[in-house]
Length: 162
Image (cartoon, rainbow, N blue to C red; front, side, top):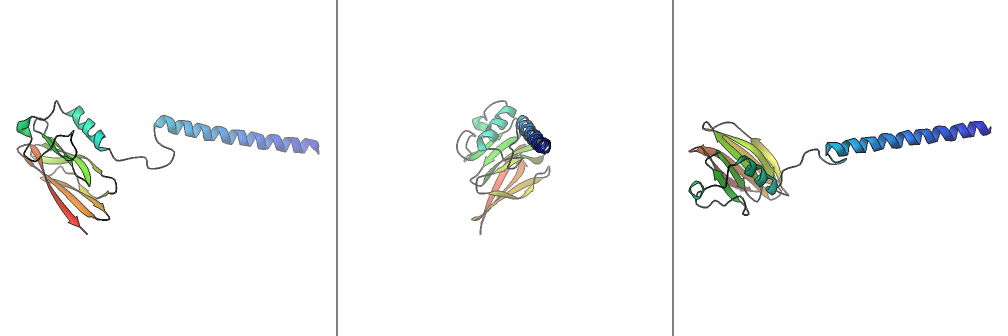
């Protein structure tokens, strides 16, 4: 009988070792892929990541002539930053941010990110004569519609309180 118990112990130990190795390998592969073991595989860009992405694609800061009255530079909190040279604009609101680009008279949303507490309700990224995104929270909705004027995206922001 002693041989049966020792074989059972060895079989269980072998199975546990195989399970531990498989789990460790799975965790290591997920770590190499750079994705968390739990949670969503994709995440919205932060405002800083949007500014850095826009800065990489933009030859320099917008000139004062290309910044309309009321717009704020990307480095400040909120606002809009147009760049006539690239036909791009960053639009930041309390509900979310987007990057829009004009090309051949058509506007296209390159990215959009809801702010914390908001989610994307609807999006029409273009390219078209207009593009829009709606951000929604428990308190209401905010719609950003973008059109091209002079090769630069021009936003129109509408708030809908529930």
